[in-house]
Image (cartoon, rainbow, N blue to C red; front, side, top):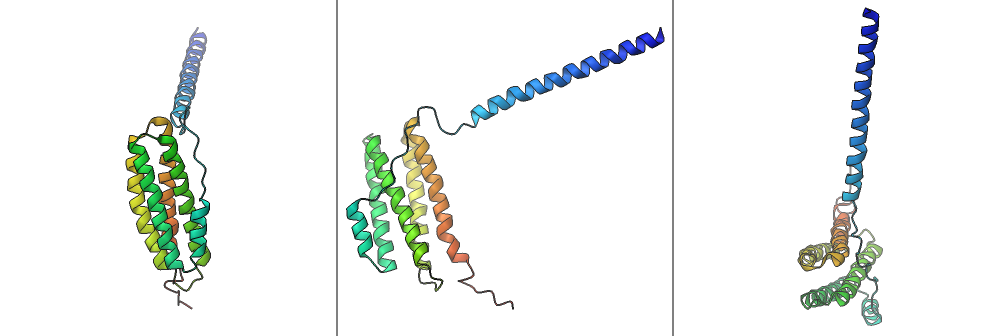
Length: 188
């Protein structure tokens, strides 16, 4: 009789552990499914991002400048003008046109970073222009966030990603300032 009861008791304990374990597995799957759906970045009805392009006139203006300093200043004025246009169109609630200007803004930032990277020959003459670009990008970031706050949800996704891109562009602009070309390593 004692053997039957201990066998019965051990079977009951095993069934409880199995039930608790399966309940835990079920809860884990259930919670992870909700977690995955909560991490979905892009809303279902988000507007596709605009094309990144530079107009022919702007491209001619930029290519005409050969001096790094003057080209950087020209590029920053063009970038600032595109962002001002986007801000004005945002206040008028013309979101499609605003998206087009932000695409131009994005392309000009890309172009300026690429130009400065190509012309960085290690002598340090380009470093002030990287610094100038980074300082401007800092102000553009706050202006982009102000635009993003007022946007409808379907337009907000691209502007949020553009702000992330501007943060990474700032990091790229600061990197050459802290390389070995600025302070050479003389530990031989």
